[in-house]
Amino acid sequence: MKLNTEDHRRAARRHLPRFVFEFLDGGAERQCCLARNRGDLDRVLLNPRVLRDSTVLDTRIEVFGETWRRPFGIAPMGFTGLTRPGGDVMLARAAAAAGVPFVLSTASNSRIEAVAQPGSALGWFQLYVMRDRAIAGQMIRRARAAGFKALVLTVDVPVSGYRERDVRNGFRLPFRPPLATLADIALHPRWLLRFLGSGMPAFVNLAETEGTDTLALQAALLSRDMDRSLDWDGLAWLRREWDGPLVLKGVLHPDDAREACRRGVDGVIVSNHGGRQLDAAPSSIDALRRVLDAIEDRIPVFVDSGFRSGLDVARALALGARAVFLGRPLLYGLAHGGEAGAAAVLDQFGSELERTMTLTGAPTVAALDRNLLASGDPL
Ligand SMILES: Cc1cc2nc3c(=O)[nH]c(=O)nc-3n(C[C@H](O)[C@H](O)[C@H](O)COP(=O)(O)O)c2cc1C
Ligand SMILES: CCCCC(=O)C(=O)O
Image (cartoon, rainbow, N blue to C red; front, top):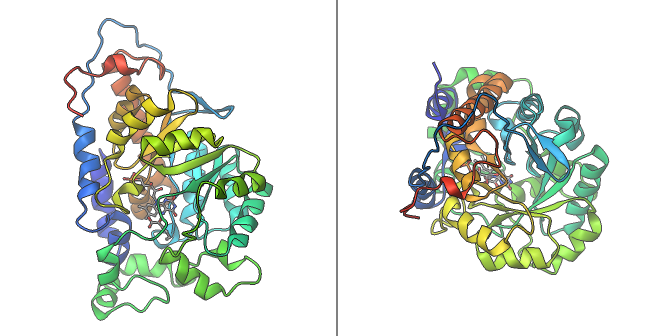
């Protein structure tokens, strides 16, 4: 029986070889940031209101002119195909069925065009800018042609965080696993069998860009060898390439949030990349408060990193976030149950959120506001 995200996580751990589970589950260095996300969320207390009619709950929100059925979506995640072949399409389908957005990663293992169809109305595209900016240009054009609504530029990966587990497990391209990793893969035949027909998943969208050395490029993406010269002026270049909503992902500092507003960005995602980049970064919920104060309602503020239940989502909404993006919980569901597993996780977050709204006397998302925050909240 799977009652919560931890149950899905345990099932994923059983299904996956260790190198895959540790890649998706792990954080950077001593994993302090990963733990901080969790600890700080647990300390946000909601002070419930009583005697409020909550027979009808409304979890819908509006974002960039579109309606989401619930105030959360699926964060962009690379190498999803390693968890399950066709994983990107499964996640997009689960999101579409739940009426929430799915953000397709630059490092996906499914073609942009294949994900656009099942994801359709609420699909967003996440961009990593590699050294050859022409590649980003090609991806943006494909994403626009395929109907993606918003572009998410991830800005917290100028270089990879140090993921020590990935190094120990030999997880890089070309994949030459050490014996211990090979032996562990052999112990997971159900996972292995799924890849017999298809082999190791590729970063197919990179592989399709013109005039590039595909293998070297894929290795560069997995080692997160990005364009470190990208700066605020680089945004002007992106603006010329993309005329839809532009969202910056990985903003933590209030001054960067203000700069984003000045530069005409349409939204920010407060994120520490799920504790996978700077281990000393503040928790996402802590940074969220400061970014919200800096932005003063000028543009929507989203958040991700560490959200494991609908109650956590309510915490961020009460602080003032427009919506929350969910990362690993969806991969746990995908790992053990494919599309149905991902759908079960989204359902779980929906019912947890509804229960929290009822318990706090907040029948609409708008009613989940700072008034619910318990005084003496230690953050
Ligand atoms: C396996 C994995 C792959 C990821 N790949 C990407 C990516 O390609 N692009 C990106 O912007 N963020 C990526 N992220 C970060 C997520 O978008 C998100 O910020 C983070 O997972 C949220 O934290 P949570 O997993 O604790 O919910 C990845 C995260 C994981 C766990
Ligand atoms: C697989 C390429 C990048 C994925 C990523 O951003 C992450 O592992 O956090």
